[in-house]
Length: 400
Image (tube, rainbow, N blue to C red):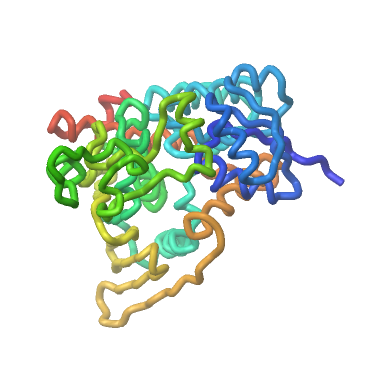
């Protein structure tokens, strides 16, 4: 019997535990031996939620000194990715780094340098690539059914995205901005579908047009202040956007007492410097163009794509799991209805984790590389600069 791979998880929040921790705990070939998180209350709650008993550390350095690891899953806040990934890779440990690779292109280059010096796998958690719908779309594009693709647009409608304004994601200094934190998914899909041409320039427009104090969805009573969290808010029974924190998941008052973090801030009143809607446009050196829309003020959740090539176009709904092909010189259409798969993000998370484990075992090639992570982040970084400085940003400004 082959030995179990020894895994650690850095960052025991929802992504680390619900997406990866649970699947790892259920994998007979894996043993979760360590958690690392500065909040011990959250770590203990996370361990209980997936029924594991790892060693627990509040610093990455301490964990790496004491554990013999085969692999590490990094799901800490985005601003910590570069520091944590470099530390792990410098120890020769394989790393699955959830997207984005880092919040800046400079941070990505630090990770790339560490990965090049190490013989370890450094895979980026681009789970969208592992959805059945987009895998089929990639095959359609690669087979040349659409001809040469020269234009892509996608629109992300994300009802749940409004809660970004309640959590750490709302802060540019932590997330790199939502063009990096959220858009890195979509910019990577553009790059992937186009076979990774070099991005040339980016223009972006974004703002907080709805989730601000002027748009509270209820009438205030004299002398009764709303917020600051949904749990505490006197209007929580009236508010259609109430989203109280789940105490059982390690987000209770005891956990908050350790670091002050509460993830149910009022999405209208919280301090924020990211956006609740916007457009970002990318032009590549080969002439292809792509546009990404993000909207977190919407009653639906879906990613909808249009891919246009010289021989036809494809229209895609990720939520409805459909692809419609319209050949350019024909009124006939080709439709695909993709079966639903089990697991987080439409079955993508289990496939992503399986791909990483197979890469660690040496039976599968790492196809989500640090270079891919850099390309995705640099587009998001350029989009953040563009929207904040109100100008077009050339990628050479960031990559030279």
